[in-house]
Image (cartoon, rainbow over all chains, first blue to last red; front, side, top):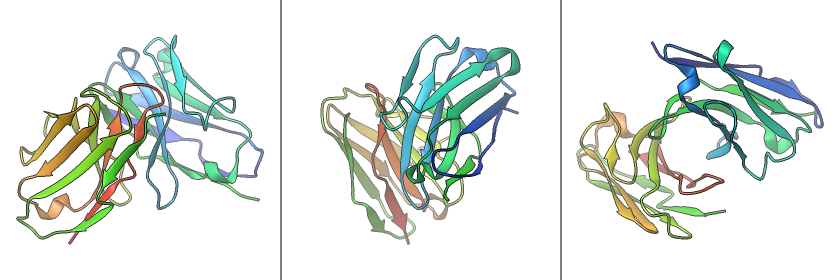
Length: 116
Length: 106
């Protein structure tokens, strides 16, 4: 069964850091581009970042540039999002998503709360 | 960044109704448009990609159309399980951008 499972969310103070992880199973992880997408409480979806199958090409939303770093370890079937300099407006559920014809497989999300 | 504007923001409908949601891009995105459905507390689900191509397993009552700047998602006969929020997404260029969502309510 194909699955993505996020972890690493939690409560962090403004200016703090968190590293999110996304564990993939049931498919050949190294074949796919991967994405991070977030959703603030009661708000819409926001695409954050993607990374190519080999990790050689990366894109970020303006809101993530300079603060967030996406990476992957294909040997561990894992995707990561290192988030530094967190702000209250980064409070959201963070989803990882596989890209095929679209974002066709999503995790359940991990909640990040930035508050003092 | 390309702005995606959905309308309406919300709508009320009944089972069996035909429902249409529109999405307008701030510039030509050819047919690089996807539609997602999200139910409360759940991750989004891909419905349509490349403007009109139905994702595997998605019921045929869902259809998409459009190219350039104007796109439409149509539900031909609303079912109880279709009450949800729908989002468009452009994947023509980076940063990818979502519409603000359309909530379909009873």
